[in-house]
Each structure stands twice: as C-alpha cells, then as structure tokens.
Image 1: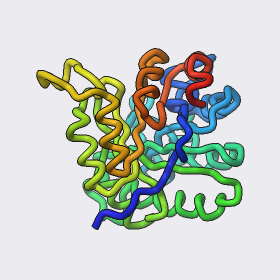
Image 2: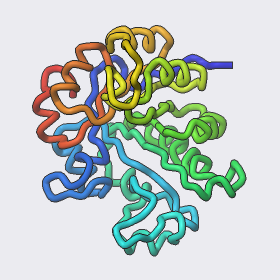
Image 3: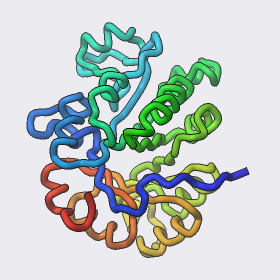
Image 4: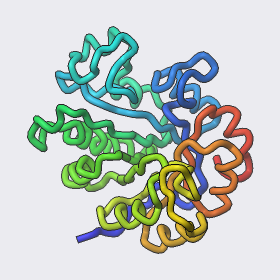
Length: 264
C-alpha cells in the first residue's frame, strides 16, 4: 500500500549544492569534502547534497565514485584506510553542519551489496543513522532527504526508517513519463531527474514531449515533489518557473546569485 508522501521542501523553491559547493573543485574545495560542504553553507545554502557509500568494515563515508584517485575501491578499504586517503565520514559531516541545514543524501550502493543480506546492505547501514538524526535533531529543524538511483535501497530505507523522506533519482535523459509513475508507485516522496529529462534529448528520442510544466503538475497532483539535478542557471530559472520544487546545482556561488529572488 502506498502511503501519503512526506513534505520535503515545504513549498519554498530550494537550491541545493551538488556534492557540497558543486561537482569537481569549486573555489579550491574538492567535491564531497567537508570544506566544500561547509563552503556551500557559507554561500547561503539552506540545503546541501552529497553522496554516501560504505567501506569494507561498514563505515559510512562521503564520496561519489566507487574508486579513489589512486584506483582503490572504497568497498575494499577499511575505515582508517579510506580516511587516510582523504575521505570524510558521514558522522563528521553531520556533526559539523550548522543546525537547520537540510541534507540530501545520495545513497550509493556497491556491487558487493549483492552478496550481502538485505539487513547488511549500504541502505540498511544508513537507515538507523538518519532515523536517529531526525529524532535527535528535530528541535534543530534539520530536514533530510535520502535519494538513490537504486529502487531497492529506497525500499530498505522505507522499511527500516519510515520517517525518512525518500527520492527516486533518474538517469540522464530518462523519460519523466516513466520516472514519475515509478516514483509514485514505489511509494517515495520525490522524483529527482536530470535537467535533460524535461525536454527532447539525445537519449530519449520520442517524437514529442509534454511540457515541463505539465510533467511537474502531474507529479504534484500525484503527491510528489520534483527535484532537478545539475541545471545551469538559465535552465534552473526555466524549470523553477515551470514549478519544480528544488534544483541541485554546480558552481554554487554563481548559480545561487543568479537565482536570487526565485529560489534559495
């Protein structure tokens, strides 16, 4: 049975910093580093987005790619090995963030999760951490959204921490006509699509497209909030005008300034 969706952004158009202050290196801060995340907050963000995955000994660390610059696989490293190579732990980030700053965690599963029982997967490790965070930080007002490209991980989160809002991530160019119904009937609270999904693109070669505003309206009527990832400032402006609830952006200082008055 699909439950009523949870509200995430409370009707306020929201800008989230992608991997902190943006993908790659922004103002000298590497993506998914503590410095990048805190710099995004210092720029005026109310929300930050970053990626979380697990090490071989089940430490939750922040990082997008399954490998590091030296070729090491994060899933093969123990916690001390991962932090020695520059990864920051989830606990460190959550402790350092000011009260009230929202976190959108992109849950990265690993290939090796296929060999683990459901209760030992990356999603199962993350669920109690965020469940306790929400319970403990409720007075501080820290909102949380867990998103993933892996629908099974969202099911695990829903089973173990039903209080947490969840969002289904869709791949570059993935059709909204598929992503929106999938998110609704998966029982999650948001759909997060790449900006290219909102119009004709080189991946989805359908002969015609519904307008972005139409797709967003359908999602809203179905109870979903709509997040767009990686639009430039011009596209973000267009999609916010079409009614999307949030944009996850790169180059936070520049994009946040461009969107001032439309979203924050």
